[in-house]
Structure formats: structure tokens, C-alpha cells
Amino acid sequence: MNKLLTTFTLCTGVVLLISSCGTEEEKKPEISQEVTDPNSSLNAKFDDKIFSIPSPMQMALLLEESKAPYNEYLLNDLGKVDDYTSEYKKALNLGIYGTDLGYVSIYKQNSTALKYLSTIEKLTSKLGLEGAFDKDFMTRFEKNSTNKDSMMVIVSDAFKKSDNFLKSNNRKSVSALILVGGWIESMYIACNINKEHANDQILDRIAEQTETLNTIVALLSDYNKKGAWDELIKDMKDLKFYFDQISIKYEFYQPVTNAKAKTTTLRHKTVVTIDSNVLNFINQKIESIRSKVTE
Image (tube, rainbow, N blue to C red; front, side, top):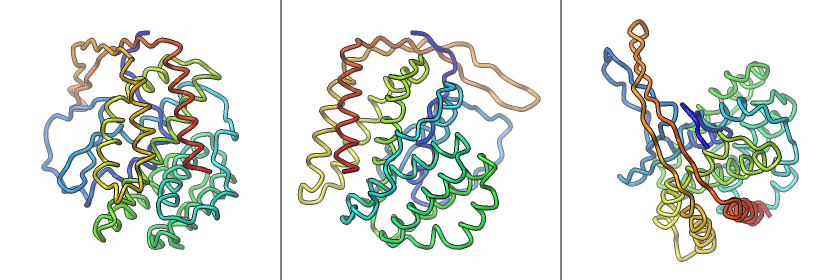
């Protein structure tokens, strides 16, 4: 299948911002020409190692473009939150609930968004991250609950605040698990939407996760203490086995420059070849991993 200038899906957006940087970005000197790429990735830094992850706003944009109907059954059950007693489960499911919050916000499910926000607040408190989701944050969120874009910015700010706290207090393993949990949930949502409402753009972005899987395996392996994450790492490697059977080719086109806006947009077409059986195995494995993480 072919596609030009794909944008990625985004429930991941809220959650992937958690690991976008270890400290606030330094202000860069003003430049005369900005180069933008709709498919660009973030570089998450852990202990001086750079891990490539999908761009934060990609998942939401693609979900909007797919016009798939809202499906509440894709969300993780709020009633499970008290069952997550280990730091491992709390962190992974904070990432999952964060992605769910992004999903419901995209579809303007405001009352549901507040419920997921309350659950996220509970998990962050249990992880010692109360400061990121304080009363000021809740007030800002409620005042902007009808403005999807504002909610995304507010929640993203809170997650970045949490990430900075975790990394500055030598709790990078928790930050890594939140990131992985968010990726698992975004893939689960994307795979299910594609099964119910086949969409070339979503399928292409699912297929392009091979490099992200390399990142995740490396990240989990680096912070795996005493083999505690062995099963999750094995599952991710098993998933990667199927992703490695996907063929992806890129054809690049002449960049488009907007002199007035001083921007240059990079363009390319993605050609994905994926066997239906391979796609089924990927769907099944994602569902299995997500089930283990949320049980």
C-alpha cells in the first residue's frame, strides 16, 4: 500500500512525552529556516543513550483522520487500578491509562476523561509523583475540558514534570516502564481499530514499529534488575520476530518550502508489504502482552 506524508496515531502522544527528555529543553538560537517532518521521532535520553520513539502527536492525528468511531471497550478498566500493587504494574499501567486519557480526549469524552485523569492521579500518588497532578493541574484541566488541544498540552506538561522528577531522583526504570506501557496501549488501540475499520495509514504505522521495538527491548534490558522484566522482554522479542517479516520501502520526494512561513516540509511515500497471517500474529501478540500487563 502507498501513502504520502503520513502522520502517526496519537494516544501515545500524552504518554510518550513522558520520556522525551531528561531535563527541560535548552532554548535553541533562532534560525531562519525550520525543517519539519510529519514522521519525525523523538530522541529519548536515558543515561547518555539515545532511544528513538515515535513523535508525540502522531497517534492522535491519525486516529482523527481515520474517522473510526469511538470504542470504549478498548480502554483499560478503571476498576483494576487498585489491583496494581507492584511498582512494575503501577508504572506500566500509568502509561496505559495515560494513553487511554489521550484516546478519550480525542473523541471529546469529557466526563470519561475526568475519570481517567482521577485514576492517573491515584497511580502517580502511589508512585510518589503527586506534585505533577496537583490541585492547580486539576483546576486547569477541568477549566479546559471542552478544549481538546488545551487538554493535551496540560496533561503533557504534567507528564514531563513527572519524568523530570523520576530521572532527577534516579528512578529512570519507572520512567522507562511508563513509556513502554504507553506504547503497548497505543499499539493495542491501533491494531483493534485497524481490524474493525481497515485503514492504510494506521496499518503503515503499525508496520513501521520495528525500530521502536528495538528501542523498547534495549531500554527494558538496560533497566532489568535481577531478571524482573525477563517475561516482558521475551514477549517483546517474540513480537519483534513477526515485525521483522514486514517489508518497508521509502521513496523520497522533493521537499516543499514555504518561504513566507520559513519552513521546509520533508516528503516521502511509504510502501508496506505485510502478509495477512503475519498481521494476525502481531494482533494476537499485542493483545496477549496487553492482557498480561493489565491483569
